Image 1: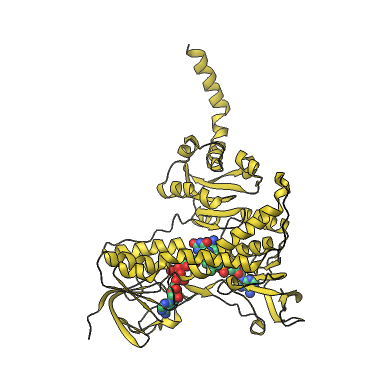
Image 2: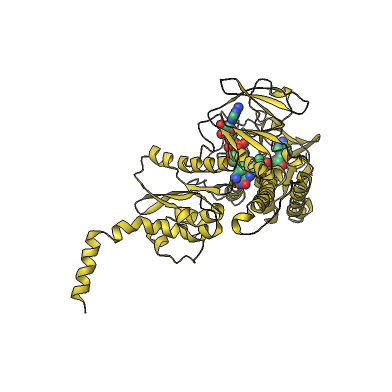
Length: 475
Ligand SMILES: Cc1cc2nc3c(=O)[nH]c(=O)nc-3n(C[C@H](O)[C@H](O)[C@H](O)COP(=O)(O)OP(=O)(O)OC[C@H]3O[C@@H](n4cnc5c(N)ncnc54)[C@H](O)[C@@H]3O)c2cc1C
Ligand SMILES: NC(=O)c1ccc[n+]([C@@H]2O[C@H](COP(=O)([O-])OP(=O)(O)OC[C@H]3O[C@@H](n4cnc5c(N)ncnc54)[C@H](O)[C@@H]3O)[C@@H](O)[C@H]2O)c1
């Protein structure tokens, strides 16, 4: 029997690619197994890249329609979804070059295509061939979870796996789920010209984000013409009057909604079952993700796992971060634990909604006494000049340091990183208040929020009294 490989990586998305390429470049004997015909995973083919590219086209259409507001006349016709999607796929193809299998083979990685499943805890089978390994990394990602809506199987519906192949803009689109996928794509399709209805079972959209900011974002989306139902589960589905339409039953009331297309964005399900996890003795959590410890080892200590198949933050940057932890533990053999205290995330609506560190609810649960500093986007000069004044920055401050920040603002996804650094490095808030921020930038919101937090202290009766006396005493 062949000697086992040093490392077998299952899944050619971000988590798997980062681990395999580093291990290969460090001279380990690495096999990377991917079941799709191309590397890149969800993020490249049906996630971040296509969604952000679609959002860009939608933004262009929106800006053109709004041009009059900026003193510029523009006429906008109908959006040609075929051309929009052609650009989406051009962008995917462009980025795909980074994930060319030959690039990884150049790093010394043996790239194989086919679905892997465990035969025992040290062996996987791929297309009938056995691959043995001393250590494994599972990075198999996730797929859309389809909620058990009675009749859902009787209607055609889109998910993130099919929506970027659409060629005709639906006149009426129902989006089931008000999480990140649902909300980003709802605004994109609405701006491209669809009449969009979001149906969210929970009390509010984007439930992990700051409630004040999600409320403001919801109001903004509604002002753009999107209908949003919250606390409304979809309770039934059936074909509509014509072959292409669908009827959805909303809430307990039995109210119906007829649409031309339904997009299901109701959460994710980890890609685990195809691996035969029980054969390898792998334990699962109640939500189906793989159980891992703080060093990302599964219940079999030589099998590590990262990314969406593990959670708890199903983002590309977290798959990459976790891959780094695995590299430390499994390759350098330096024990390193995950630290989720300063995880940034962004929902790419316009304006964007970004967050890092503790939410208010988490701080309360942890019993951390904190103050809130709030600064409105409408008071930032650059935002006024840009004509985008919706949103605010909400800083949670404990003992002079930021423990969490939530921001609804144009380009919030770029602005959050200064705050992420402050949270990670425990930089005192007064340093952000005194740091020079170029004028007029949107980034001034951080300095202004910090400054506003200190201004009652600065202009207090006591300080005024002190200043008066210093100026009297000194020449
Ligand atoms: C519409 C959408 C938009 C998103 N936008 C963002 C965003 O803006 N920012 C962000 O950070 N995140 C975003 N995400 C989430 C992001 O795509 C995922 O967090 C990320 O792709 C996870 O990476 P991964 O390596 O864990 O898994 P994946 O990228 O899914 O890769 C897993 C790979 O494993 C392969 N595989 C599965 N099972 C097997 C098997 N048995 N054998 C062999 N191969 C297998 C799959 O084919 C896949 O290629 C978005 C997701 C969606 C759906
Ligand atoms: N910008 C980003 O970083 C980004 C963008 C898109 C996706 N993602 C990642 O992908 C993950 C999955 O996204 P998602 O939006 O599918 O999941 P999600 O879990 O974030 O949201 C799903 C929503 O659907 C609702 N829902 C579930 N069943 C329902 C039903 N029957 N009727 C009505 N509503 C229902 C849930 O209450 C929930 O609010 C996210 O958690 C995120 O990590 C990230």
